[in-house]
Image (cartoon, rainbow, N blue to C red; front, side, top):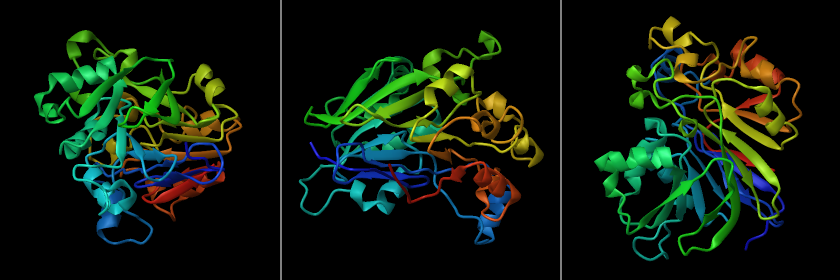
Length: 328
């Protein structure tokens, strides 16, 4: 079991965490948010130095920088792997070997599952998800390319810790506890006949509490959250690090930018700003480091010289970016 004195994180589109010399968790966190076309994405096209292009939402964590677990497999996963050679096989590795030991899904969104198709080349890895999410994959035959002979499906239960295992079945020292947070079923799975919640169930949107070998909570990963109830504030308070849903700045910004017809609430995301926003919700919590991830291209906080970025930074928030590194 490797030991590390710090938890280091770097973000592909958002963060990475790696291990050093003392027992704790090391992660590589990558965040990638590149979706709807908007003023922000247009500034990227115009090569504005204040608008840095990002890939879509995924993170990867490791204790030894050799064996990795990915949280959510974004459509940009192939590019993310190329950009991060630690997650690619070396010349000395045997054929069909991959440093990716497992993938854990927090929901069934296309943004979090499409990248699984890039992992179809008969490399072994463990696939973790709720029964609900694994059932969605099973019902879509395209995911049969993940041959069960090599890719073991591992159901996770809400509020039950699960040790992440390497492909040789040895425990990694990283434990995650999934728990439900306010949200909704993936957009492409909505069923209007089932009422205003479109058939959503608890397992549709989960967060992860991540612990290292000594059993201490290292960080919370919450890429999607519709609101911040008191129980959730209590759970994350006094933590070292939180990676939190930063999809939108205002609830109706996609409508105002003429790039969509849905509000953030309709999509299951709380906004950064406003009385009901995440900046306000977190302002009295004692969290050492707060980072927004899963950021839509309409969000002006992506622009380094924007007033919205200044507001977020002054409130103690960082905006994730590709290759960002975090150490705890």
